[in-house]
Length: 159
Image (cartoon, rainbow, N blue to C red; front, side, top):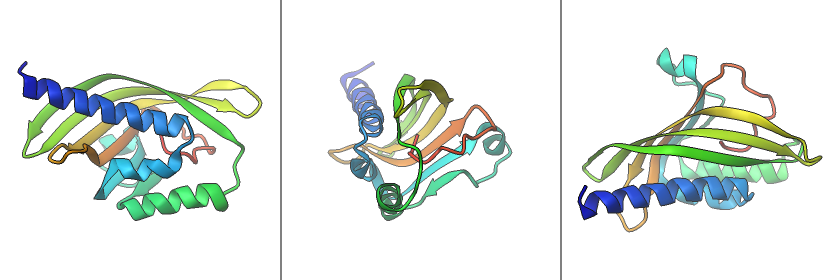
């Protein structure tokens, strides 16, 4: 592995780590900044993904849509207060071409309720297209493929 490959892998790992930290630390206003514009953010069940369906339980096609989601989470939506804690890995850079890295990684998300109750909330994988052409790496696409078809109705915060 040459120095350029190592730099790409480090940059990708930093972006993915920053993503998890921003969500876990409830800094959701920073979440859209991790994405190019336009972009795609989709949370979908494994069976729907494998069937080629494009509908999911959460979708955004622009940073503006993401900002709207954060605004509604903060101002309009009513949901029981909670936080996530992500564990992500391994991070696999599958391909790099034309300023884009194709990256796959696995995740486990634990949900911590305001009462302190902690439960396994979601598992799955991230399928990412990351724009690596600029000084800052940005997600072009982040498809969150959930292992389960059962989606918790409390899914409000991005995974």
